[in-house]
Amino acid sequence: MQKLGVEVLTISVDSIYVHKMWNEHELSKMINKDIPFPMLSDQDGSIGKMYGIYDEDTGVETRGRFIIDPDGIIQGFEVLTPPVGRNISESVRQIKAFQLVRESQGAEATPSGWKPGKKTLKPSPDLVGNIWKEWKVSEAFDD
Amino acid sequence: MAEEFRPGCQRPEIKKPKVDEAVSQGVLPLKEEGNVMVKVGKAAPDFTASAYYQGKFMNVSLSEYIGKWVLICFYPGDFTFV
Image 1 (tube, each protein chain N blue to C red):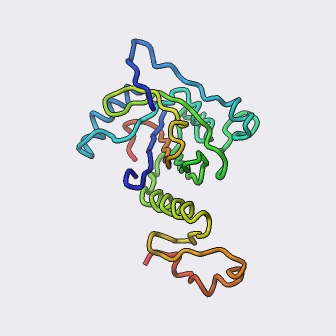
Image 2 (cartoon, each protein chain N blue to C red):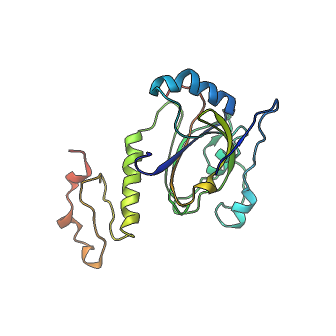
Image 3 (cartoon, helix red, strand yellow):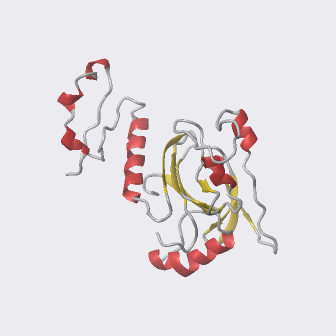
């Protein structure tokens, strides 16, 4: 993420003291250094409520992941219930796609299954009804 | 930038997000009971929260990150398994 120029913030209802202990006792042992991003504390769930991912029944925040662009606009999100972890590579792929689209100022779009190196589409009146010539369904899947 | 603070014996102050402000700016829909999901293509609601970052305690606001790409990850709790 740092390589992509992306700032990461993590948020849970735990206190900053528990964040410190989790970093020291477990996470830093996984990566042999301190967690390289701020671990935020949302003890009353108010941030989670604002983003729609706070679960009142269990009093915790579900696995909500939000991509926010340099203008502060939410470009994408994904929310999972607690037992299933995220796919970080998919977040990286989406960020690369959003960065490409932004750099092209909307001249390019990334079709289903796009990843870096694969063909983008350039929306124009001529492309309407002709995507079948430019793009094959097989490109939606990994090689 | 994020401002460091020294911990006292009380819990760090909870900085309530400015929900009313977000509603008046049209970022959030009118407040209803329960959760309302944010929308893609709309401004991310701003917030300030206490944070632990590399040995320090600090206050972090989302608005500090304007001009940068940001990935926010919520999760159920520290010391959970996935």
